[in-house]
Every structure is written in C-alpha cells, then in structure tokens.
Length: 357
Image (cartoon, rainbow, N blue to C red; front, side, top):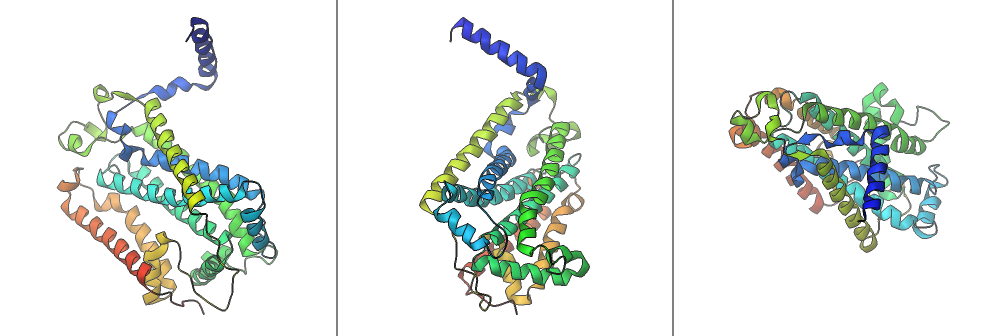
C-alpha cells in the first residue's frame, strides 16, 4: 500500500474514531474467547441480524390479513423478486439460530459462566432463549399452511388455559384485528423490541464482567472474583468481534445454500377439519407431553423447563466451575438433556395424533 493511501486510511480512521469511539472496541479479552465455543452467542446475534434483514424484505410482500395471507405467500414463492430465495435464507437461518442459542446456553452452563457475578446475565440469556422460541413459533404460524393453522389452534387452546393472562393471544381480545395479524405484529415489532433490550443488557453485562474464565483456571484460584486477571488478557475484542461476524456470515452462506437445495416448505391450504402435522423439530419434546397429557401439558412443561433454567444459579451455588467437579449438577443436566432428546426421537417416529377438538 502506498504511503499516501496509508495516510488517507489513518486520517479516515482517526475521523471515525473521534466521532464514534471505535477504538474502545480494542479492549483486552482472554485468548480462549476466540474459540468457536465462546463465539456461539455472537454467531446467534449475527443470525438475528440476518433474520431482521431478510424479514424486512419479506415484509414488503406479506399480507397478514386472513383473506389475503395465502395469496401473498404464493406470491412470495413464485412472483416477488428474490422473495423465494430470501425466504429460504430466513427459514434456514431461523433453524440455525435456534441451534446456536441452545448450544450457547449449554456452553455457559458447562463452563459455569452463570456463577457470581454473572447471574443476571444468565437470566438475560434464558429470556433471550424464550424470545427465540417465541420468534420460531410466531414465524411458523405466519406461513399459513396446515401446520401453521394447527399451531394457531394450539395457541387458542393455551390462551384459554391461561384465562385473563392469555387474552392477548385469543380471538376475544379484539374483533377489529385478526389474531394472525396480531401475531405478525408481535413477530415484527414486539419481539424484536424485547430482543433488542435484552441484547443491550446482555452485551453490557459481558463488557462489565468480562469474558468468564476457563473453569480449570478458576478452580485453581487463578480467577479471583470470577474474572480473568489483566495479565492474562492476551487478545482484543476486535479480533473476537471479527470471528463472531465471520462465523455468523458463514452460517448465513450455509443457510443460503440450504435454501437453494431445500427450499423453505409451504404446506397445503389449511383445512380446519383435520389435524395431520407435527410442529418444527425444536418443539418435538413438548409434542410428546401433549400426546400423553393433552394440550395443557405444553404450557406446564414449558413453564417447568424455563423455571428450572432460571433457578440454575440457585441450584448450583458452589464456587467450583469445572463440570467434572460438579457431578450432581452435571448428572441432572445430562438427564434433562437426555429426556428432551429421547422425547424428540420418539415424536419423530410416532404417528401424528389429534389433540385439538
């Protein structure tokens, strides 16, 4: 690079840095933060950004009113410019994000990164997992095929069980705006707002407390107060940020390829007289409870699962962080994970059952 070019780059950088404070991102972090396991949260965040961009494009062609929604979905699939391709990216990135968010929370649990002083950040992460699931549910309804129709009927059933707490999700909330349009509003405005607030809190707390130490180092007394000593902060956040963005974009490219090879599905026009579909794979374990105990089991199992996640910092209060030194907690988590996987496999092979009257 010529000296004039280098000088222009330095002047441009200095101008931007003076106004945006970009050099603040060069704060030190531990080298292990740059491993794939410690970038899963960032990969998920980049996935959310891709979902926002692709969702914005799809919203230009989507009509959430019941009389028009199916026609708009067909137009997205066959007529609207790039919409079918963008929908494929949106669909597959959504699935990838569910997986990376779950893997992220498993990593945080395994490395005991939820322990003092990071309990509040764990709760923010659990809330973000709930928001991710809510995004996935509302998105599955918006495509308005048979699977979407049956999911909406489950929504009505659970709203009835909740009574006054579930009135927003029921048809009785207002006759002026159909439930489908209100779920669309939640998908594109309410949930993004909540997610943004939680992301801000999550990132602030990560910056405030720093990247959590490796469990073995913490157990050896090398991370007083749950923080990596400054002398061991051998990397920079800018490098960490670059890796998160790079891995996130690779995931988006993978989603684009999957979208071309396996286009986002769109099932048959809804038929209210039949129940013939299963939910997306991440809801399989709840579907098993529904098979055995009815629709209300979805609500109770979900509440139990997220309550259990929320009280993890209370259940595991020892100062030890290595998973092998937390055998009871590790065994309990392994049991829960095994149950979820086993139920999911069971539902994958089980025939479709009718649950909605």
